[in-house]
Amino acid sequence: TVMPRFEMHLMVAEKSDDKFETVEYDIVCFVKDPTDMKEVQSSANEIISDHLENAGNVVLFGTAVVEVSGEEILNIAFQNKDADQEEVNSIMDLCVLGEETIH
Image (cartoon, rainbow, N blue to C red; front, side, top):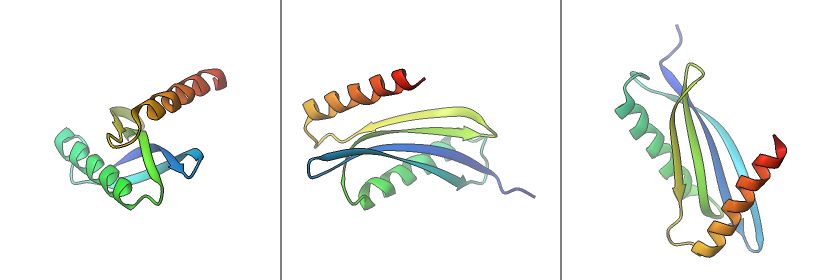
């Protein structure tokens, strides 16, 4: 039997010194009931918080897409309120533009 679970694709924009990079993670999360949005959401938020607290670099912003059985059910965007907002915005623009040119 497959344990009840959801998958989360986490993209984090990190800054170290003068370098900036986006890092992507694919995370599998086990829950009691993947159809329980409250449980999925709190579990996803917990994983994001843990990740941000343990990140080696400064996290500027990121997104998390939660999927259950291959279907996207939740999309979370987060941003570091303590970071330089102008810098965050210009990098966000780069990421969005970058994604559009790739596809």
